[in-house]
Image (cartoon, rainbow, N blue to C red; front, side):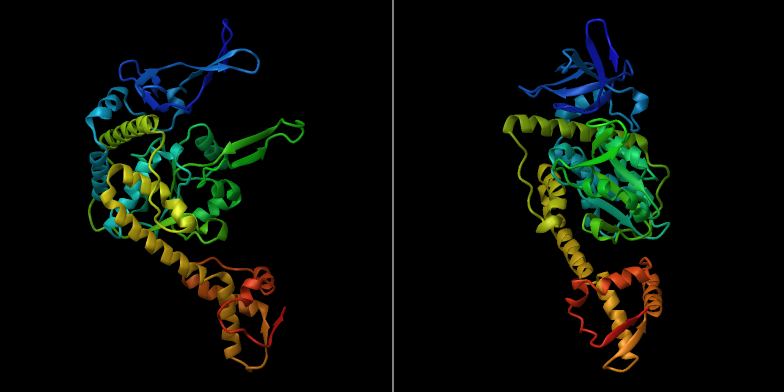
Length: 418
């Protein structure tokens, strides 16, 4: 932050009202703001925006960040301006869908529609209230990383990373308003230390994550409040299974590719699609100024699943509504999978293990050694790729109502030995 002689304070920023996006001027190579006029909806390219007076009486002027501070390729000024009037929303969607289907092998075309809707919704993210994790799940060498690169390279402000480091992710969300793709081997292991951040990332309801930077600084000092919300794409070799995050991802199972894809991804094509997406964003912002708001998203499912998919449904409504039935069919699939997962909780697994022990002994009563019970459970869980459980977790679960409210027959007479 630099203070000039005329009492102007220059403050770099990548986000403010009426900003379409940051662009690169092809002639000067400078980063510029592409703005929407608040009255007529006309666009303009500027390098300084008057933000008004500060509490100290000085005037703040927003300026773009340096180009090397932005970890994504910037759209070109001339191209985004050309695409505003020269492109259409349905054509943009169809070409984006073709790009994904041409570069990724997926279980069905419906999942290509899902990923296309996800990319489109990244250009509307600040106008939405919810955004799901898209989780590409499967074993190594199943094309997950290629799918990740294919999508994030054409998303708004897409950043690809292999490590979910807290400090960097907070900056990506708060300062850069970026779409983040995390190419992880074990996503759960990476995000478990940051549960509050990742739980808040899917909901745009004013929730912030708080970090105390200096506990000795005193009241109102040394504390940082950061927004977490943003579009997120994830790969993982292991499933997302813990309660605090299990309801937030939409899972796309990777499949072994049958086609030969050129490597690396053609960056010239990704640049054009990203610029067309930026122009689409400008058209939608103009529409909001003209009509007051965007349409209400079509409800795909009840509850949290419906909330998570609202932004994807809106993306299709604004580009090609003919694909809404495809998304609705996927919503039914996701809902059925979630219902099955609810019935297959840890407590139910524990009951099944108890019943297996009962089947081996007297029907009235049997002594169960806790270590043997845990060992038997972990053998079965390891065969299906689930995490091992501890004796302490099992011991606590015997006291929970969830264990005894299950529909599985009550193991009468069970005595637990330590």
